[in-house]
Length: 456
Image (cartoon, rainbow, N blue to C red):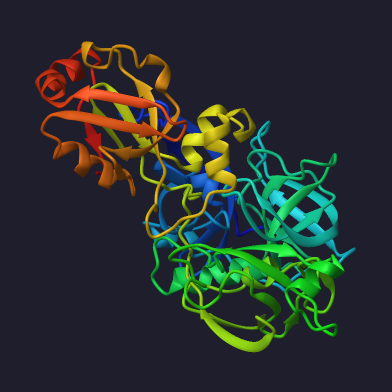
């Protein structure tokens, strides 16, 4: 019975509180699903075990549970690899095997433990779409497969089998735009994760080119950048500082191919000669340290460039496992702008416009590698009149450009007298440095804050 390696995963987890960064949220219980793939390896979803303080797994054939731990996790691809402390627990199970990328109309079975019952659930479906889509856990765009079978809470991390009994995907989210359909992480993404996990990486990050690009549908635009009539591609508009492409690809380059794939003027490739989708489909198969070869046009000249791939840093980090850092000075609470911080508004569209701008449009540069936000003001005699300055981006301290949170801390701590801060909205905050130092401990005690900083 090929369902036997399916496991139920029980977790206790405790999240960081990005709204009040010196606190954590109350611990909660959760359940999910997983599948045994051999060698004391249990594959499940990253969001199933994210922030977990205690994990147990249970077999179909027994009510007993054993303790498990996370061996490797990849938030980008929403995958995690667990192992159990008592390996004899898995000895009677036949490991599941990974199958190929399914094709359209293939029959599949989703097996797991959705909420609402204690027994295993099996639902049948058909593959309806193979394309790049957004992973809700990481907001990354990676290869994804849509099936017409519902995936509900508790199914997450569980296997999707083909008709031969091989695992062709891991269930991970509902398809938001249609009823009774779900999405699974396909085997090319799983194999990419396992390659790095089995190499010993506890935290696996997927690679990125670090480019912002524009489509080239308009003929006048193609002529402007001297694109040969016989070629198609994408126009590079910005290159992220510190990314895979930094120093190798330039703004105004036009990318024509990536490895053996031709890039269309819409920015798509014919993935595996079958599926017209974003070039991120190809990147979904590549790990840090892999290399891609691109052909491009630069100022009318044809070139080829080899790019060693890395997990490109962003000005506003998207990672799920980002450290909850803060610094308090004169009652002003400073935090780096991250996706986790923006999620305190539940949806990014509800966040202040300036923060949305930095998330969507601003680029990391050698001068600015992190956005520092004045997240809240703990009212005190040192900051009278500045109560309305929360959610402001801090750009300067005493006329010096702020590079990141650590740089802000260094600038403030070396100030002897008057402290002047400028904000992105051109506001002024002026503090008495001596008064701030004198009031620091009393202010922290008043607001029951254990320390004036974390992670800096």
